[in-house]
Image 1 (cartoon, rainbow, N blue to C red):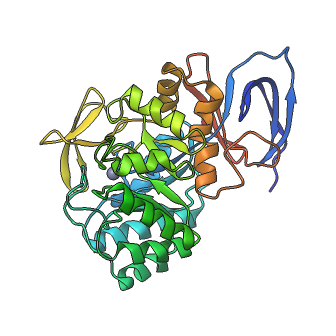
Image 2 (cartoon, helix red, strand yellow):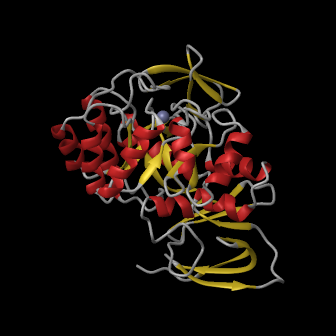
Length: 374
Ligand SMILES: [Zn+2]
């Protein structure tokens, strides 16, 4: 069924800059017309989140109901494509979560964001860099990787390069088209560089999971994972711009080092949108206070960030609107191989976010259908 062509007037955020004009679209964008006489809201491509555990009371580990709840919540904040993210949990719980996401995909509900697949965060990570992941890490076996690939729903995997068996697992994931992201790791920069080379030789695309978090620091004679990530211009990097996980100067340094490969994520937990109080992450108690989520020992446990707030944070730190928009849409689309979306241009999916002058989300469209707002 084709819908008629809709028209929006406003400030169109294009990859190269902001242009006043008209946007015409049905399921895809069919027209863009510059018109300096036009005023109106800010119109951006829909946001893409490659790393989020939950929100709106739901969590990826809950199964299909949790995925729907988190998807609805983040959609209302402008996220039109998302990758529900698993926790390092017992093996069967992970497989059950993958099934839940497949169930949501199979229902193809057009009022939800698009869900191209899962981000598998753990269990193949370092037990010494868990962050807020529970201690259910594994050293991957070929049989386990086969079982995961057979689910055909994982599109991104976080791995610690120094763990036994991970090199071989990374090659298998890369050959299957799964993005390989370095994270929750104690590897040194040399180990990361060797790992990056083998992922690329297998035809893979390399990323870093929540840059700066759960990977140690950087020093002149000890570049570490952060140094390896910043030095590798072509490697993509997620970053949690809630200003709790990463402070302004660290964010700005990363934007300068990686202008085309840094993208923003939420790493959101289920309590996001529910206010302060006690909640749960991967079977652990989590406390949310003033928007910060922590375990009982004070470890940061995911975020209550939404991508519209990440955009506002980036702008407040002096990033211009076109660049901030790229970090939320074009760059993650390119990373994940989603050539049909990520920018406002003719032929792309009409995944659109409309913001008012206070940069609050007013309306959201998924593939041309109004799914949130007025
Ligand atoms: Zn993590």
